[in-house]
Image (cartoon, rainbow, N blue to C red; front, side):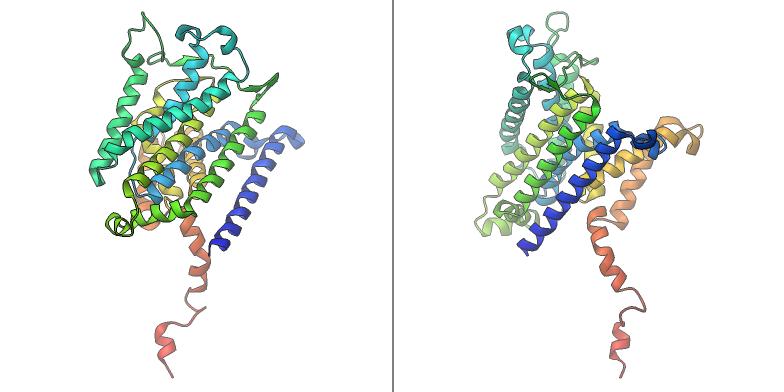
Length: 371
């Protein structure tokens, strides 16, 4: 069974890598003057594809935490924001914090900050994970929600410092002029270059998560999700494995946050609020919580719907305005939970079996009982 899963996942990674490559080459070459945006009526742009890659990294970690370990998290955007702000602050406020200008201007400095951001976020998740993950059910949801709101307020309120004295996070306005990533003299920009970097990281994140969930750690996480009491009876250290899952998801979120900061060349508190965390949970639920492949699918579906509503929503919901977007997302989530509780990925995998069992193809029980 493990070999079957491994073979299928390898093919999945290969197919996704080919799709990413073809879309990237199509945007670069633009045959006949057409690009990704023109093919979709300006609903999906190349910018959207990059955002899908970045958020896929976050949701992959969230799937491991919620879908496999069974730990609810309503504050995942906080870890996403930590990565973004660590990269943003230490590339735009380096001299203010006593870091020499020669270091700040070095090409390797943003890459080092990306790694340090992942390490710091992972350590932070480890420290807060021990007490928070002792909570269960609604109390755990409220604990992670409170953590996310607290970090969001710190971003918004300049970490508690007076902006006139020392401006670290930029407050409501955030940080601007975050440099583009480069390797030596080779700048990973325009967008077509950055697209390949983001999706390389996304594919590596998916491969790493697949390796985790099909390992001994993954079996332990599934046991915890099923029943913590039964898992403890089988000598599984439930507290340790839950913290590992939280740290794993936090590290991936931090990586995505750093990529987001250098993609936007700016960060502000808005995307890392409770609404941002809720959107990540919706993406994970739509794609399928208990399937790593649900991450890219769920992110794609939600972002495509978002872009469609922004581009065409005024025609469908005339006179309603931007408030139609959360209503539509609410309806989508309700429908998914009622009719596709396992998400789109698992439901699509079951379609062939449902097709084979349709009336007229296989005999029913009553038909089999007849002589």
